[in-house]
Length: 195
Image (tube, rainbow, N blue to C red):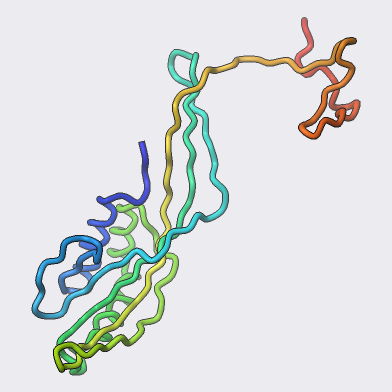
């Protein structure tokens, strides 16, 4: 079982941004619907691991197997590109990205992000990206949002070993580390002496 960034998260994030922007929002790598007015596209720019992964072992009810689950924190950068056929103040793409920057910090938006398993790390500056299209200028503005989330992967079960003993004998006078060096005397003691 995997938890983290999934299709449901992508759909939920697109819907949230559509509600906040008030215009249709689509992922650029999915089939596109035709939009005549203002619209926005989303691109996943990057995904990085944050910190170190951690593995947790869960003992099965039978007491004979352990199931390892590895957890990791990640950050993803999502690029929001807004396009408007108008350059007029109040209708340009920059107006929408400016509005989005503020609305992403509203408590209702933070709660919806939390319900998707996401948190806001940073909201970047809006960058103007006007383009000429069919002889007319089309207003464009790009904003990058960094979000954090947790992910987990469960591995196959492994046998459970209840106890283990490490000790030295006359035949093996010292325990060696991975480099082949004998461990110091304080580390040579029997950690589970026989009763």
